[in-house]
Image (tube, rainbow, N blue to C red):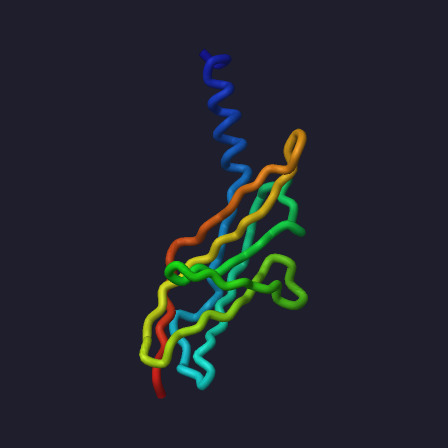
Length: 125
């Protein structure tokens, strides 16, 4: 019985060891500004030992549009980017997508992580 359940147990431990977490660091509301660009920030945490950190390509997804992100200074696991919010709009929904490669036998593998949807409210003063 134990020998039959060992492969299943090994697979579940392997999958649990590769957990990736995206943490939204952006406030839920921001004051409207003149240029209509708003900064969003995310932390990327993973226990995946084989991840190739130099291959990470983070993006912000707003509807069907994507916006590039850049690493924050002095921190290796945080990225920030700007999203446009038109003057007449007070709510924008967005999510993060991280594309990356990881080491495996032979050529590197490709994978991604997508966050849940977040809402940013723009308030007028």
